[in-house]
Length: 183
Image (cartoon, rainbow, N blue to C red; front, side, top):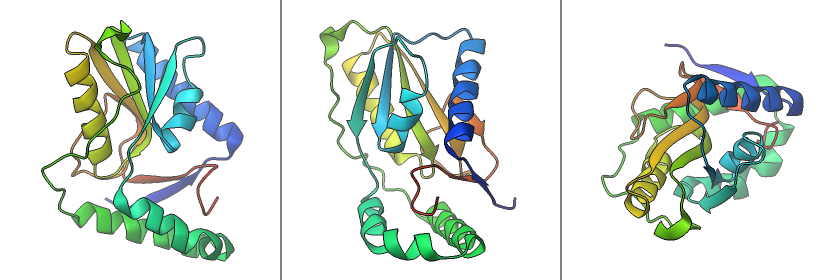
């Protein structure tokens, strides 16, 4: 399947969050807590379920901080076609990357006494799925009686560790978010 790149400006991003919330609601699920994975998931989570308690946790791929340091000024200056090719090249590398079996440690901002019965874990994208898998496992361990679901804007690869319950795209769509380095 061919890759495609979609650019979301602030208005299109707000619409995407609204459509993702509608997909969750259409299934009959109404979370009593939204747990966002920082950084991108925080933006998505904040765009969904106003009035529902929102918490966040930090867990990032090791390459994320390296990519940020090396590329911020360079990538922004490149023509859009080159930026798209770089996004696709990164996605191809992630697609071939062998995911380690051990999940990273997650520190949740709540404990078993928080009272949440329906937790929606939100992130911007699933690439390897390792981050989402780790957070879902941690939430289920701390809140074994809770109904835990997950929502993302896009699932970029076929080979991932966690399948989100809700996603706007599941077809090799790479999303350029308003906060992306090449936005």
